[in-house]
Length: 130
Image 1 (tube, rainbow, N blue to C red):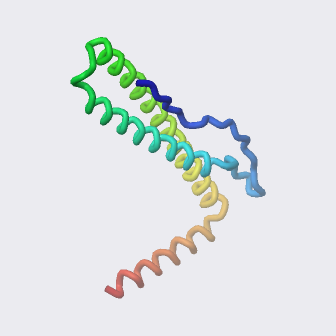
Image 2: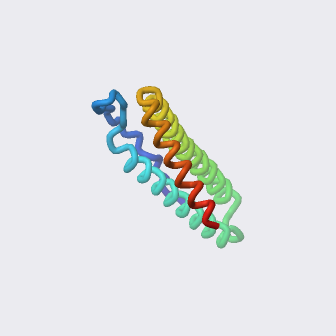
């Protein structure tokens, strides 16, 4: 029983700055989505392999069962590593977004207050209609 479980692409993309001095990573959204999709596909493939193994487990020898166990442990480890990579990517994206928001509020406090007041008023109107 051999199957390849791929890890998410690490893709060293370059960072560039826009006119406000804020940084963004080119293609990070597509890379993140592709990584998540690959992880999901790998999980589905592993589930199918495990189901197939369970279906034929009674006919396997002890050596075959030991080999299947070792293969599963290796695949679980690989998937765990891939999941951590996706989680770290999401964490970095969140931190970058929070930093950009904080910088915007610091740079344009009046505009930020007006937007917050407008959003608050809109929510108040929508909630008040119930």
